Image (tube, rainbow, N blue to C red; front, side):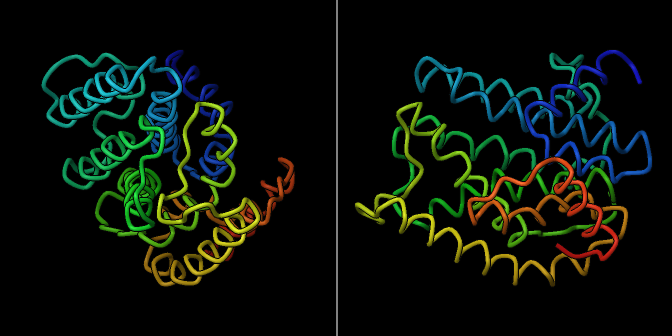
Length: 251
């Protein structure tokens, strides 16, 4: 493994430990390195809102990411980020480009104090950030398939938002839709739990259609139910859950 790839691996392990552990299910070293590169892009995009001093600064950073990802897909010039350098050549341009674009575009919502008017807008954000990531990961691991992974991404996305609620509020932002009014924290947690359960049921059909090499792209969604219940499994339990999900081909 080269030094840039090692740095990416360490960064993903710190920033996204569940995704990093899922990547250990990938047997092919090249595919695993490219998956880690994708997860490093995801992690950096997730830092934009917290690092931006104002929404305009965040918009400029996201515009940079869009330009760099387009240059990567077009093989147009040298790239300015080691993750994109490592990701170059992974998957088909259209299969990877669409999800990457969705991942970047959705992050604009994180720059506003209360970005989502209703649940429809919030779900569109989940489809971009979490669904986009899963679709991009599937394109890296199995370039010949077109997997929508809509409900699988939503299951993880709802659980992720619940875990990140304190971080959002610490930045003076709130992802809960305005249409939810003054819902209490208890009501929000209950609502998320129902949404995760419904999404996991619908996700089963999506995952059955995935070829075996692409399963690590969605494996971490097996943790969504536990996180939606407010649990925080330790690394040993996470590893066991991911391995069991991989052996069954189910989340």
